[in-house]
Length: 203
Length: 203
Image (tube, rainbow over all chains, first blue to last red; front, side):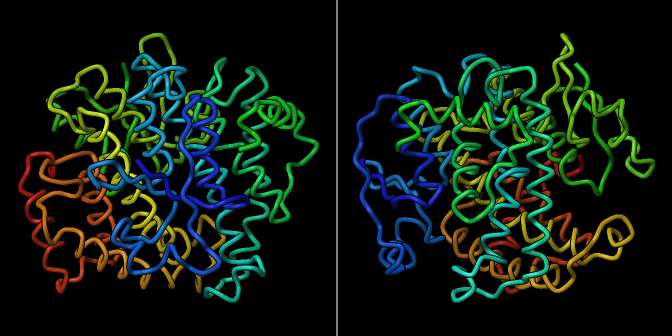
Protein backbone atom coordinates (compact mmCIF):
# COMPACT_ATOMS: atom_id res chain seq x y z
CA UNK A 1 0.00 0.00 0.00
CA UNK A 2 1.33 3.42 -0.97
CA UNK A 3 -0.09 6.80 0.03
CA UNK A 4 0.72 9.72 -2.25
CA UNK A 5 0.59 13.12 -0.58
CA UNK A 6 2.25 16.45 0.03
CA UNK A 7 3.31 18.43 3.10
CA UNK A 8 1.54 21.36 4.75
CA UNK A 9 -0.16 23.61 3.84
CA UNK A 10 -1.96 21.25 1.39
CA UNK A 11 -5.13 20.52 3.40
CA UNK A 12 -6.30 17.27 1.79
CA UNK A 13 -3.19 15.13 2.25
CA UNK A 14 -3.05 16.46 5.81
CA UNK A 15 -6.58 15.20 6.49
CA UNK A 16 -5.44 11.65 5.68
CA UNK A 17 -2.31 11.99 7.82
CA UNK A 18 -4.40 13.26 10.76
CA UNK A 19 -6.80 10.36 10.30
CA UNK A 20 -3.94 7.84 10.35
CA UNK A 21 -2.55 9.34 13.57
CA UNK A 22 -5.98 9.10 15.22
CA UNK A 23 -6.23 5.47 14.06
CA UNK A 24 -2.70 4.62 15.14
CA UNK A 25 -1.87 3.41 11.63
CA UNK A 26 1.77 3.76 10.64
CA UNK A 27 2.01 4.44 6.91
CA UNK A 28 4.65 6.75 5.50
CA UNK A 29 3.52 9.23 2.87
CA UNK A 30 5.14 9.16 -0.57
CA UNK A 31 5.64 12.81 -1.36
CA UNK A 32 4.56 14.25 -4.70
CA UNK A 33 6.28 17.53 -5.62
CA UNK A 34 3.39 19.90 -6.26
CA UNK A 35 5.73 22.81 -7.10
CA UNK A 36 7.06 20.70 -9.98
CA UNK A 37 3.44 19.81 -10.88
CA UNK A 38 4.24 16.11 -10.52
CA UNK A 39 0.60 15.43 -9.64
CA UNK A 40 -0.40 16.69 -13.09
CA UNK A 41 2.13 14.50 -14.95
CA UNK A 42 1.03 11.79 -17.38
CA UNK A 43 2.57 9.18 -15.09
CA UNK A 44 0.67 10.30 -12.02
CA UNK A 45 -2.55 10.58 -14.02
CA UNK A 46 -2.42 6.82 -14.56
CA UNK A 47 -3.01 6.62 -10.79
CA UNK A 48 -5.52 9.47 -10.60
CA UNK A 49 -7.05 10.75 -13.84
CA UNK A 50 -7.82 14.07 -12.16
CA UNK A 51 -4.18 14.59 -11.15
CA UNK A 52 -5.00 15.12 -7.49
CA UNK A 53 -3.53 14.10 -4.15
CA UNK A 54 -3.99 12.34 -1.83
CA UNK A 55 -4.20 9.05 -3.73
CA UNK A 56 -3.92 5.60 -2.16
CA UNK A 57 -2.43 2.77 -4.20
CA UNK A 58 -3.43 -0.69 -3.00
CA UNK A 59 -1.18 -3.75 -3.29
CA UNK A 60 -3.02 -4.98 -6.39
CA UNK A 61 -2.45 -1.64 -8.12
CA UNK A 62 -5.98 -0.25 -7.75
CA UNK A 63 -5.99 3.37 -6.70
CA UNK A 64 -8.45 5.20 -4.46
CA UNK A 65 -8.60 8.96 -4.49
CA UNK A 66 -10.68 11.55 -2.63
CA UNK A 67 -9.62 12.18 0.95
CA UNK A 68 -12.78 10.97 2.67
CA UNK A 69 -12.97 7.81 0.52
CA UNK A 70 -9.36 6.97 1.45
CA UNK A 71 -10.12 7.48 5.14
CA UNK A 72 -13.28 5.39 4.81
CA UNK A 73 -11.13 2.55 3.43
CA UNK A 74 -8.92 2.67 6.54
CA UNK A 75 -12.03 2.79 8.76
CA UNK A 76 -13.30 -0.38 7.09
CA UNK A 77 -10.05 -2.33 7.46
CA UNK A 78 -9.47 -1.05 11.01
CA UNK A 79 -12.78 -0.03 12.62
CA UNK A 80 -11.39 1.13 15.98
CA UNK A 81 -11.20 3.82 17.17
CA UNK A 82 -14.30 4.66 15.14
CA UNK A 83 -14.12 7.97 13.28
CA UNK A 84 -17.13 7.49 10.99
CA UNK A 85 -19.60 6.14 13.57
CA UNK A 86 -20.64 2.59 14.45
CA UNK A 87 -24.45 2.36 14.15
CA UNK A 88 -26.60 3.32 11.15
CA UNK A 89 -27.62 6.62 12.71
CA UNK A 90 -24.08 7.43 13.90
CA UNK A 91 -22.72 6.75 10.42
CA UNK A 92 -25.39 8.96 8.83
CA UNK A 93 -24.75 11.72 11.38
CA UNK A 94 -20.97 11.74 10.80
CA UNK A 95 -21.43 11.61 7.03
CA UNK A 96 -23.89 14.51 7.24
CA UNK A 97 -21.39 16.59 9.17
CA UNK A 98 -18.46 15.70 6.93
CA UNK A 99 -20.50 16.87 3.96
CA UNK A 100 -21.79 20.00 5.68
CA UNK A 101 -18.22 20.95 6.60
CA UNK A 102 -17.04 20.37 3.05
CA UNK A 103 -19.90 22.18 1.32
CA UNK A 104 -20.47 25.00 3.81
CA UNK A 105 -17.06 25.64 5.39
CA UNK A 106 -14.50 24.30 2.91
CA UNK A 107 -16.12 25.51 -0.32
CA UNK A 108 -15.83 29.27 0.39
CA UNK A 109 -12.24 28.80 1.58
CA UNK A 110 -11.44 26.89 -1.61
CA UNK A 111 -13.18 29.49 -3.77
CA UNK A 112 -11.27 32.32 -2.10
CA UNK A 113 -7.98 30.49 -2.62
CA UNK A 114 -8.82 29.58 -6.21
CA UNK A 115 -10.32 32.91 -7.31
CA UNK A 116 -8.74 35.58 -5.14
CA UNK A 117 -5.44 34.57 -3.59
CA UNK A 118 -2.28 35.92 -5.35
CA UNK A 119 -0.55 32.52 -5.15
CA UNK A 120 -3.01 30.89 -7.54
CA UNK A 121 -3.35 33.92 -9.85
CA UNK A 122 -0.36 32.89 -11.99
CA UNK A 123 -1.68 29.38 -12.56
CA UNK A 124 -5.38 29.84 -13.23
CA UNK A 125 -7.99 32.29 -14.53
CA UNK A 126 -9.48 34.00 -11.53
CA UNK A 127 -12.85 35.71 -11.06
CA UNK A 128 -11.74 38.07 -8.33
CA UNK A 129 -15.10 39.64 -7.45
CA UNK A 130 -16.52 36.20 -6.92
CA UNK A 131 -13.39 35.09 -5.06
CA UNK A 132 -13.57 38.02 -2.66
CA UNK A 133 -17.28 37.45 -1.99
CA UNK A 134 -16.30 34.22 -0.28
CA UNK A 135 -14.85 36.14 2.67
CA UNK A 136 -18.40 36.95 3.74
CA UNK A 137 -19.64 33.44 2.89
CA UNK A 138 -16.92 31.97 5.11
CA UNK A 139 -17.74 34.46 7.90
CA UNK A 140 -21.38 33.36 7.76
CA UNK A 141 -20.34 29.70 7.79
CA UNK A 142 -18.36 30.36 10.97
CA UNK A 143 -21.39 32.03 12.58
CA UNK A 144 -23.53 29.00 11.77
CA UNK A 145 -20.95 26.49 13.01
CA UNK A 146 -20.40 28.53 16.18
CA UNK A 147 -24.13 28.27 16.98
CA UNK A 148 -24.05 24.53 16.29
CA UNK A 149 -21.12 24.05 18.69
CA UNK A 150 -22.93 25.76 21.57
CA UNK A 151 -24.15 22.46 23.01
CA UNK A 152 -21.50 19.87 22.17
CA UNK A 153 -17.73 19.42 22.24
CA UNK A 154 -17.25 18.07 18.70
CA UNK A 155 -18.76 18.76 15.30
CA UNK A 156 -20.92 15.63 15.06
CA UNK A 157 -21.70 15.24 18.77
CA UNK A 158 -19.97 13.98 21.90
CA UNK A 159 -17.35 11.99 20.00
CA UNK A 160 -14.45 13.26 17.92
CA UNK A 161 -14.93 12.18 14.29
CA UNK A 162 -13.89 12.60 10.67
CA UNK A 163 -16.00 15.78 10.63
CA UNK A 164 -13.61 17.38 13.15
CA UNK A 165 -10.62 16.47 11.00
CA UNK A 166 -12.28 18.10 7.99
CA UNK A 167 -13.20 21.26 9.88
CA UNK A 168 -9.82 21.58 11.60
CA UNK A 169 -7.80 21.22 8.40
CA UNK A 170 -10.11 23.74 6.72
CA UNK A 171 -9.75 26.29 9.52
CA UNK A 172 -5.97 25.89 9.61
CA UNK A 173 -5.64 26.22 5.83
CA UNK A 174 -7.95 29.26 5.89
CA UNK A 175 -5.73 30.86 8.53
CA UNK A 176 -2.69 30.20 6.36
CA UNK A 177 -4.27 32.00 3.38
CA UNK A 178 -5.34 34.97 5.49
CA UNK A 179 -8.76 33.99 6.81
CA UNK A 180 -8.31 33.28 10.53
CA UNK A 181 -11.16 32.14 12.79
CA UNK A 182 -13.23 35.11 13.97
CA UNK A 183 -12.41 35.46 17.69
CA UNK A 184 -16.00 36.49 18.41
CA UNK A 185 -17.03 32.92 17.58
CA UNK A 186 -16.14 31.68 21.04
CA UNK A 187 -17.58 28.16 20.68
CA UNK A 188 -15.64 27.69 17.48
CA UNK A 189 -12.46 29.03 19.08
CA UNK A 190 -12.88 26.66 22.05
CA UNK A 191 -13.51 23.72 19.70
CA UNK A 192 -10.39 24.63 17.72
CA UNK A 193 -8.28 24.69 20.88
CA UNK A 194 -9.74 21.32 21.88
CA UNK A 195 -8.89 19.58 18.60
CA UNK A 196 -5.52 21.34 18.29
CA UNK A 197 -4.43 19.76 21.59
CA UNK A 198 -4.65 16.27 20.05
CA UNK A 199 -1.47 14.62 18.70
CA UNK A 200 -3.07 14.42 15.24
CA UNK A 201 -2.92 18.21 14.95
CA UNK A 202 0.83 17.95 14.32
CA UNK A 203 0.31 15.72 11.26
CA UNK B 1 -39.78 8.30 9.77
CA UNK B 2 -40.53 11.33 7.62
CA UNK B 3 -38.70 12.40 4.48
CA UNK B 4 -38.94 16.08 3.56
CA UNK B 5 -38.43 16.83 -0.13
CA UNK B 6 -39.64 18.64 -3.22
CA UNK B 7 -40.62 17.59 -6.76
CA UNK B 8 -38.56 17.82 -9.93
CA UNK B 9 -36.51 19.65 -11.01
CA UNK B 10 -34.90 19.88 -7.52
CA UNK B 11 -32.01 17.41 -7.97
CA UNK B 12 -31.20 16.51 -4.37
CA UNK B 13 -34.63 15.29 -3.19
CA UNK B 14 -34.83 13.34 -6.47
CA UNK B 15 -31.56 11.54 -5.65
CA UNK B 16 -33.13 10.18 -2.45
CA UNK B 17 -36.33 9.17 -4.28
CA UNK B 18 -34.28 7.35 -6.95
CA UNK B 19 -32.30 5.59 -4.23
CA UNK B 20 -35.49 4.44 -2.48
CA UNK B 21 -36.89 3.03 -5.77
CA UNK B 22 -33.63 1.12 -6.36
CA UNK B 23 -33.83 -0.24 -2.80
CA UNK B 24 -37.52 -1.09 -3.04
CA UNK B 25 -38.26 1.03 0.02
CA UNK B 26 -41.71 2.54 0.12
CA UNK B 27 -41.60 5.91 1.89
CA UNK B 28 -43.78 8.80 0.77
CA UNK B 29 -42.12 12.20 0.55
CA UNK B 30 -43.50 15.05 2.64
CA UNK B 31 -43.40 17.97 0.24
CA UNK B 32 -41.90 21.31 1.27
CA UNK B 33 -43.06 24.26 -0.84
CA UNK B 34 -39.81 25.80 -2.09
CA UNK B 35 -41.64 28.55 -3.99
CA UNK B 36 -43.07 29.71 -0.66
CA UNK B 37 -39.56 29.33 0.85
CA UNK B 38 -40.91 26.91 3.47
CA UNK B 39 -37.47 25.28 3.70
CA UNK B 40 -36.08 28.61 4.94
CA UNK B 41 -38.76 29.09 7.61
CA UNK B 42 -37.89 29.18 11.32
CA UNK B 43 -39.96 26.03 11.83
CA UNK B 44 -38.12 24.03 9.18
CA UNK B 45 -34.77 25.30 10.42
CA UNK B 46 -35.39 23.46 13.69
CA UNK B 47 -35.11 20.31 11.54
CA UNK B 48 -32.22 21.54 9.37
CA UNK B 49 -30.32 24.62 10.50
CA UNK B 50 -29.19 25.22 6.90
CA UNK B 51 -32.78 25.27 5.62
CA UNK B 52 -32.15 22.62 2.99
CA UNK B 53 -33.98 19.62 1.61
CA UNK B 54 -33.94 16.66 1.58
CA UNK B 55 -34.08 16.11 5.33
CA UNK B 56 -34.96 12.84 7.02
CA UNK B 57 -36.69 12.91 10.40
CA UNK B 58 -36.28 9.72 12.42
CA UNK B 59 -38.91 8.41 14.82
CA UNK B 60 -37.05 9.80 17.85
CA UNK B 61 -37.02 13.27 16.28
CA UNK B 62 -33.36 13.32 15.21
CA UNK B 63 -32.92 14.71 11.72
CA UNK B 64 -30.39 13.72 9.09
CA UNK B 65 -29.70 16.02 6.18
CA UNK B 66 -27.39 15.83 3.14
CA UNK B 67 -28.62 13.58 0.36
CA UNK B 68 -25.79 11.06 0.46
CA UNK B 69 -25.90 10.77 4.27
CA UNK B 70 -29.65 10.07 4.09
CA UNK B 71 -29.08 7.39 1.45
CA UNK B 72 -26.24 5.92 3.51
CA UNK B 73 -28.67 5.57 6.43
CA UNK B 74 -31.06 3.55 4.26
CA UNK B 75 -28.12 1.44 2.99
CA UNK B 76 -27.21 0.63 6.59
CA UNK B 77 -30.71 -0.38 7.67
CA UNK B 78 -31.36 -2.31 4.43
CA UNK B 79 -28.04 -3.40 2.85
CA UNK B 80 -29.48 -5.12 -0.26
CA UNK B 81 -29.36 -4.38 -3.10
CA UNK B 82 -26.04 -2.73 -2.28
CA UNK B 83 -25.62 0.77 -3.71
CA UNK B 84 -22.57 1.83 -1.68
CA UNK B 85 -20.49 -1.37 -2.07
CA UNK B 86 -20.03 -4.39 0.22
CA UNK B 87 -16.28 -4.83 0.84
CA UNK B 88 -13.82 -2.21 2.10
CA UNK B 89 -12.45 -1.56 -1.37
CA UNK B 90 -15.91 -1.48 -2.99
CA UNK B 91 -17.11 1.01 -0.38
CA UNK B 92 -14.05 3.20 -0.93
CA UNK B 93 -14.47 3.01 -4.71
CA UNK B 94 -18.15 4.01 -4.63
CA UNK B 95 -17.45 6.81 -2.15
CA UNK B 96 -14.60 8.05 -4.38
CA UNK B 97 -16.93 8.18 -7.38
CA UNK B 98 -19.79 9.80 -5.47
CA UNK B 99 -17.39 12.53 -4.41
CA UNK B 100 -15.81 12.91 -7.83
CA UNK B 101 -19.26 13.29 -9.39
CA UNK B 102 -20.25 15.87 -6.80
CA UNK B 103 -17.04 17.91 -6.94
CA UNK B 104 -16.24 17.61 -10.66
CA UNK B 105 -19.64 17.25 -12.37
CA UNK B 106 -22.17 18.75 -9.97
CA UNK B 107 -20.18 21.77 -8.77
CA UNK B 108 -19.97 23.54 -12.18
CA UNK B 109 -23.68 22.86 -12.80
CA UNK B 110 -24.51 24.29 -9.38
CA UNK B 111 -22.27 27.31 -9.94
CA UNK B 112 -23.87 28.00 -13.33
CA UNK B 113 -27.34 27.76 -11.79
CA UNK B 114 -26.39 29.88 -8.80
CA UNK B 115 -24.37 32.56 -10.60
CA UNK B 116 -25.69 32.73 -14.15
CA UNK B 117 -29.21 31.36 -14.55
CA UNK B 118 -32.00 34.00 -14.72
CA UNK B 119 -34.20 32.03 -12.30
CA UNK B 120 -31.84 32.55 -9.38
CA UNK B 121 -30.91 36.14 -10.30
CA UNK B 122 -33.86 37.62 -8.38
CA UNK B 123 -33.02 35.74 -5.18
CA UNK B 124 -29.26 36.02 -4.86
CA UNK B 125 -26.24 38.15 -5.78
CA UNK B 126 -24.73 36.61 -8.90
CA UNK B 127 -21.20 36.82 -10.29
CA UNK B 128 -22.15 36.29 -13.89
CA UNK B 129 -18.67 36.08 -15.46
CA UNK B 130 -17.78 33.38 -12.99
CA UNK B 131 -21.16 31.70 -13.50
CA UNK B 132 -20.74 31.57 -17.27
CA UNK B 133 -17.21 30.16 -16.98
CA UNK B 134 -18.76 27.01 -15.59
CA UNK B 135 -20.14 26.10 -19.02
CA UNK B 136 -16.58 25.24 -20.06
CA UNK B 137 -15.80 23.60 -16.73
CA UNK B 138 -18.84 21.36 -17.14
CA UNK B 139 -17.88 20.59 -20.76
CA UNK B 140 -14.43 19.50 -19.57
CA UNK B 141 -15.98 17.40 -16.81
CA UNK B 142 -18.07 15.60 -19.43
CA UNK B 143 -14.94 14.92 -21.54
CA UNK B 144 -13.22 13.41 -18.54
CA UNK B 145 -16.21 11.28 -17.51
CA UNK B 146 -16.69 10.13 -21.11
CA UNK B 147 -13.11 8.80 -21.15
CA UNK B 148 -13.66 7.09 -17.81
CA UNK B 149 -16.78 5.34 -19.12
CA UNK B 150 -14.94 3.86 -22.15
CA UNK B 151 -14.32 0.55 -20.39
CA UNK B 152 -17.24 0.00 -18.04
CA UNK B 153 -21.05 0.23 -17.95
CA UNK B 154 -21.46 2.22 -14.74
CA UNK B 155 -19.64 5.09 -13.06
CA UNK B 156 -17.93 3.06 -10.31
CA UNK B 157 -17.47 -0.18 -12.29
CA UNK B 158 -19.58 -3.15 -13.36
CA UNK B 159 -22.32 -2.50 -10.81
CA UNK B 160 -24.86 0.31 -10.69
CA UNK B 161 -24.29 2.42 -7.56
CA UNK B 162 -25.01 5.65 -5.72
CA UNK B 163 -22.47 7.31 -8.02
CA UNK B 164 -24.76 6.67 -11.01
CA UNK B 165 -27.70 8.22 -9.16
CA UNK B 166 -25.62 11.32 -8.43
CA UNK B 167 -24.40 11.64 -12.03
CA UNK B 168 -27.80 10.97 -13.58
CA UNK B 169 -29.63 13.54 -11.44
CA UNK B 170 -26.87 16.06 -12.19
CA UNK B 171 -27.05 15.49 -15.95
CA UNK B 172 -30.85 15.73 -15.96
CA UNK B 173 -30.86 18.91 -13.89
CA UNK B 174 -28.15 20.38 -16.14
CA UNK B 175 -30.29 19.63 -19.18
CA UNK B 176 -33.24 21.35 -17.52
CA UNK B 177 -31.21 24.55 -16.96
CA UNK B 178 -29.88 24.56 -20.53
CA UNK B 179 -26.72 22.45 -20.34
CA UNK B 180 -27.53 19.17 -22.13
CA UNK B 181 -25.04 16.30 -22.45
CA UNK B 182 -22.66 16.89 -25.37
CA UNK B 183 -23.69 14.32 -28.01
CA UNK B 184 -20.04 13.86 -29.01
CA UNK B 185 -19.48 12.18 -25.64
CA UNK B 186 -20.79 8.86 -26.89
CA UNK B 187 -19.83 6.78 -23.82
CA UNK B 188 -21.59 9.29 -21.60
CA UNK B 189 -24.65 9.31 -23.86
CA UNK B 190 -24.78 5.49 -23.83
CA UNK B 191 -24.42 5.43 -20.05
CA UNK B 192 -27.23 7.98 -19.72
CA UNK B 193 -29.54 5.85 -21.89
CA UNK B 194 -28.64 2.81 -19.78
CA UNK B 195 -29.49 4.44 -16.43
CA UNK B 196 -32.54 6.23 -17.85
CA UNK B 197 -34.08 2.85 -18.74
CA UNK B 198 -34.25 1.91 -15.05
CA UNK B 199 -37.53 2.41 -13.13
CA UNK B 200 -35.73 4.75 -10.73
CA UNK B 201 -35.34 7.31 -13.53
CA UNK B 202 -39.03 8.18 -13.18
CA UNK B 203 -38.61 9.12 -9.51
